[in-house]
Each structure stands twice: as C-alpha cells, then as structure tokens.
Length: 388
Image (cartoon, rainbow, N blue to C red; front, side, top):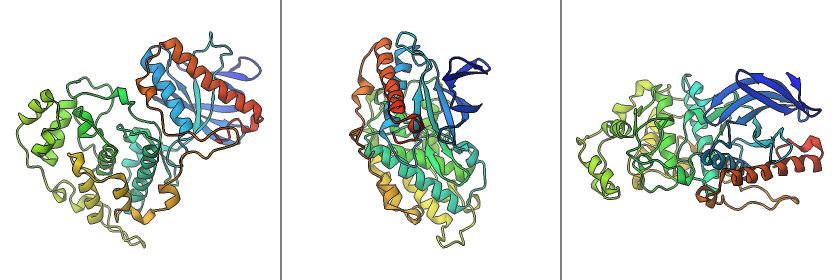
C-alpha cells in the first residue's frame, strides 16, 4: 500500500493495481469476473462496507468501451432494492489524456446465488429469493431493459436473504446466433429464443428464472450445453420438441436444423422434478408446497415464449404472491431531485451507437467527472451516499 497523492492510495493484488481515494480502507479482493476485479472495502465517510469494481481495460476496444458506458448509464438509471446500487464512481487520473481506469463503488453483498443454490433451502427462502428476482426484473423492464442473460453468478444475496441483480445483461446488439459455437460465457440460462436468434419480449427473462429455480430444486444445472446446438438438444430432450407454430418463427437455416432433429416427447414435470427433490411442505403461515413450486416451474420453463408465463403473472402465482408488496413490485423509476431530472426509460440508441474508442472514452470521462463534481458540491460526505 502506498500513497499516490494526498487523496489516493495504491494497493497491489497480484497483477492488479487498485488506486482508490483514501476514504476507502481495508481493501481485500473478493472476485474476478469478465468485466473486472472487485474488492471489498470500508468507506470511512459513510461508515459502510462497499464493493469497488475496477473495470478491466475498458478502453482496449470499442466493445469494452461501449459496455463500460452502458453499465455506467444503467446503474445511474435504476433505483430498486433488488438491483445493485451505484454509490460512487471515480478515476485516479486527472485529465482526459491520462484517463484509463474506471472504478465503480457498489453495495457489498455476502454471496452469489451459486453458493446459495448448494444450500438446502426451505420453501420460504426459495420463494422469497424468486420473488425478489422477479421484482428486480420487473423494475428493469419498466426502465426499458430486457436482461436476457440472468444467471446465478450475477445475482447476489445477503445473509438476511435479501437479493440483488448485479448486472444488466446483453446489450441489444450483443445478441447471439444459433450457429456461434465457442463457449466463452455461461449460456445455460439463456432462453430458447436467445439461443436460436429469434425475436424476444420481456418473458425471455422468465425462462432464466425458471432455470435458476429448477437448479435450486435439483441441485445441478438443468441444461448444461457445451455450445448452442448441444444446449438446444438438452432443452428439447427434457421438455419436448416445440410445436410447428414455433418452428415457423425461426430463421430458415436454424429452422432447417431444428426440424431435422429427432422428435422428443419430453417428460412431465413430476418426472423431471419429483417430490423427493423438494423441501418438505412448509408449516409456516404461508403453507407453501412442492406442488405449487412445480406448477410455477411448469409455467416458466416453456420453450415457446407465446405460451410462457409473464413476469406479472409469475408475481401473482400462489408460490410467490405470499410476499407481494405493491411498493416493491411497482417501484417507480428514480425520483426527481432538485439537481437532476428523473430519467426516462433507457435510451437503447447507446447499444446501437457507433463511436471510436476515443469518443466512448470521452463520454465515460464526462460521466465520472459528473460524479466527482457532485461529490465536491454536496460535500465529501454525500459523495457516496447512494442518492444518485
């Protein structure tokens, strides 16, 4: 640890250097993902534990730069207790010419859902986690964001069973096509319409929730494909070949492949998820049962999105609605403050916009400077208050 200048301190973790304002103490690495390294730290100003994410080489190419800008914009837009909040943002570099590192400060959580899935969850905890996922997804949808890439590694949980969605999924232009085979990231939770390169609507995210719920019950990944084609085969072997009306909505080359696969009947849900896999029926006032959980699963894990339950329908399902709270389900987009107009839905032209790396870099720099200016205007104590 060394002081870089009076406001910043440098920490070295393996090959990664963290240069952070001196208000952040006791840094310790707690995760490395595709998009950056995360450290836990203590914020001496707000007196809370936080996570500091250093975006990995955000300006190495246009894709990385666009992703960094999109993540930043979205974290400023959404404000819901089931979506991770942006508390602060900074860079140790003082000019646009030097600018190369972006740090985002977020709430610190205890574990991701991968760890929770390995636990023996009772019906209360399972349904409460699913309820919170659905509330977070509904809020993203109200902001014009369809996630399409929900997975356990990007959902975090606290020891009190509160849950937050960590990221914002695929940009509109970052979709996948069926014949892209090399696996770089986990696609086990992506809906058939994403795997097959079809159009999609909001209930694309319900498929992912169904996969996560099924994994909580079964204790293992439902559709662990090694590539898109293997993924599709795993889905239809268990759930059955979809109807002709589904096939007619596929692009010709994909349809040709899909129609030439052997036809599968699929299995009934009581065979795929027998009673023995479920927690025992709840004795608490909610009286949740395996049959309710299985019914919800059977409505979420439907290959054809035309027949799949919607987010609103899922929130009203008997396995979920025991937690229903209007203020959580229909939380408004960010409240207008005197300093900032309330944002409208996310501007998707960001996903389609073509800029050079230098132009993206300047846009991100402006965003970070806005944060720093707000911090100095409000006094340092408000710099990381979360009143975004």
